[in-house]
Length: 205
Image: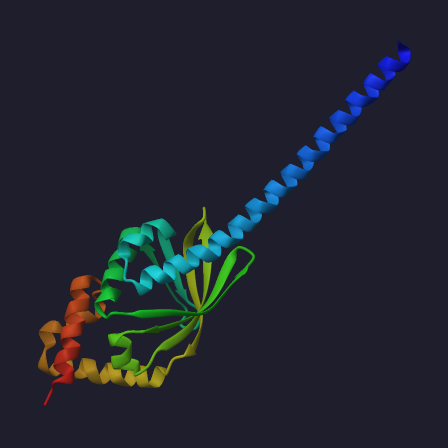
């Protein structure tokens, strides 16, 4: 009887050790999956953001952005914080110029996503005469985008851009001063006035 009880005790202990071991393995596997899922989600979220911009889909921003978005221009020491509603309105302004966003490269580094983006549209073509390529770093909070920093302008002819804009605004001042508030109005209506001003300038005699 003592031998039987001993064998039973050993058997119970072995079963208990197996349960603990497999529970440990399952826990590690689960944590690994969650970590991998988080990394994939951040990359996927960044891709969804640029796709929404490329599609001019302002309604998609609620799914990818937090309630506010900090945007920063490192080279120009400038930053602006948008509420979600303000950024949705900015997308509507952007949409007027029929933009094209292209992801040239994208990678995750820790909790950040680093991208290289090409953008062109009617306004950029008008002032810059070709696409602008930037490097951007995206930050996240609660699995949504909370910060986008433009760290470098890889392709941007600042001299040409400023020259064309100054000539454009100077001509508008002299000929259509009543329309000039479009330059500060980043709403859909402001974008439409901007487009109208570009048309007037291109058709000038």
